[in-house]
Image 1 (tube, rainbow, N blue to C red):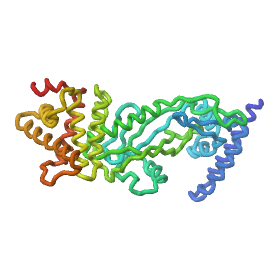
Image 2 (cartoon, rainbow, N blue to C red):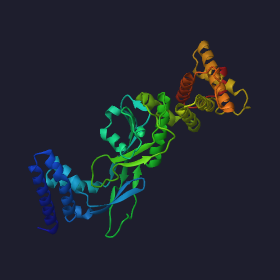
Image 3 (cartoon, rainbow, N blue to C red):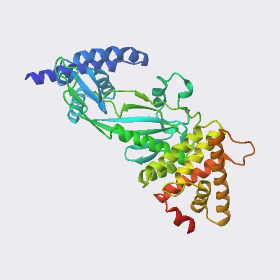
Image 4 (cartoon, rainbow, N blue to C red):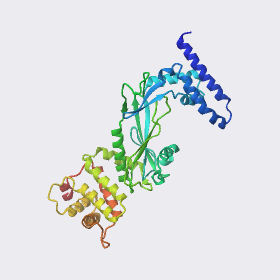
Length: 392
């Protein structure tokens, strides 16, 4: 018997010993006391025998240029396989297959503060909306640990955004005495793409719902257990002025449509800025601030591409809104009136810092009108020729 076969036999013997101990356990309490000790013994034992010995010292790439140095840490993964009834020889084969594959799938999870999804919905491959009812309970637990302010936790009905990404190579064996890898890894899709998805979904949820939406936190996990995966529970917190305290209903299909249209719109910067202003209006506490943000959103939307003299802006915005959204003369007249009032409220907020009590403007209706306008523009795919629209 060659040395390799002897090492394999020695490895199988160590795994059979642990499997026998596992088979003798009859109570959950016994298992809870046994497992940590068994993991430590396996970590030490497997680091000295093939095929585990080759990978005892390894660098795990966790994506986007990040990584960690790992020593041993085979025991937990092996015990989980033995617990599932896999024979020791098959455990070794599974380990070798994992090493040969040398790529790892991860999931990045972001709570959508302020959005309550009605169903699971794939926005595009690897980008999925998850309603609270379908989310694993440990997602919320992962987020709870680093937060010290309870109001920052997702509410029970908060939905989630799941982003799938792959890292390859997943690991690199480290030479003796080395603490850093010689090579690099590739992350698909990378952090820049995933961040753009986050921003676009936030805008889509604002357009599909009626409340503010923020995605300030994310964590990632390996998609499945692997001895060559790492970074479990890594968390990123992005500062924002305030967190939505409740989750408003957002139809997943409406969010999917808005998400798709935002990605295809011909002049994305303007429509994105207008949507961001709408989102800020929903965060506003003072009526003057809300009027200001809604007015700016309307001005961005209805004055885009207008290079004429900046006069009669309120008239232009109201006329264009009426032409874009109205289906008959009576509806156009109502839209013209409401939009002009909204923009006049914006002007008063700019110049005086407050809204007079006698000012006739319904900011709730103003929010609805701006939301309707932005969704209508998105449906067109680009900003229209305003002259042709208003005289047509």
